[in-house]
Image 1 (cartoon, rainbow, N blue to C red):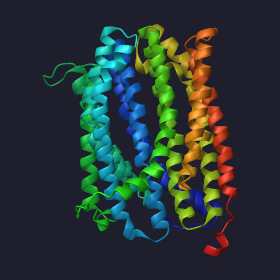
Image 2 (cartoon, rainbow, N blue to C red):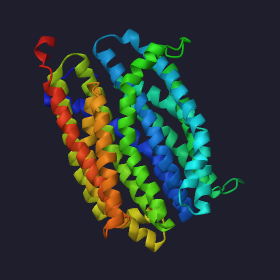
Image 3 (cartoon, helix red, strand yellow):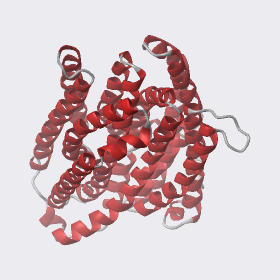
Image 4 (cartoon, helix red, strand yellow):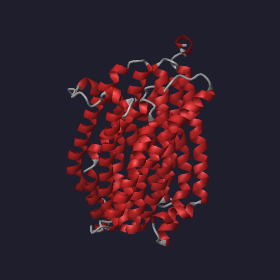
Length: 454
């Protein structure tokens, strides 16, 4: 990151930061995308099992990962305030904290996995696949959490191309591992949907090894000597990160978990409905990586300017990011409408699954437009370190408004399972409106001090 003065300079720098983040996010989600597509080609039961497993895992991962995202505004503001000497310690403590959180997830998961699956009205084969998929995936949780902490450090320095390279190097491994373990190649048995969990776990380990190598050997990261000192864990440093990260994590959890809750509620329908829902939500979530990437770029840009007390510049970056997200969302909506049939056929070849997937995709056009507003605004607010109110807004918008609305429409109207998608649209729209109001308040509560800093 560096200081900019004109809109043209800001747009150029923002796109330079955004491009690699977007490729990285699309690449990371491509692992889930290939898991779903290749599992679906193994059978509808495998696709449904991976759908249930993912619906339980993704909210946990994204919520905990939100805590690690706190490193981005922390490092960005330290560098913006010319306090780079404090960065290495913050990153080391972040690695310790991410390891601890991974262990907590593993321990809790070992106790609650069976009871949760047994409460769901699943076909026995689907339940077995979901359980074994999650067990296989759990062997990669520790490297995944550590990587996301290190990635926040890399991105906060504006070196987003590095995480892009790491992801692009790791993605082929995921595809090869999926091919081998899902379909049973090179003498190995065909694990079906469970093989997707094995493949993803192995890919997480590969990704972490690539990252550590670059941080040790490549400048400017090597100059920070992250791994050269065995620093004592600091409860104070953990608390500073948790104060920012926990609200971020819960806000993300409340948003992502509503999608998982819908998938779980849909377990009362037949396997074809679950499979179609998972296919549609998987593709829509793939497109969600666009506004999410813009949000991450805004956290870096806004955090840098806010850390340097250049509030007017931070405000300009906020509106720049939102505008780009809305334009891209409209283009994605057109693409979904035009290519609905080819997209649906990627996941399964059963005619009834294909038709139902296309039906769900039409609803995805509208809720991804709400995401184009909401996600970038959340990213900008994180740059300001304003995270507590957004947590409450997320809870109310998604769980008090969105999910109950979806349940009522699915249960008492002609929408049926599509009623849950209507609820998603309502919840996301309510969240976007509330977040925008909060952004306006944050930007106005303190006078611009740009003139003093120039």
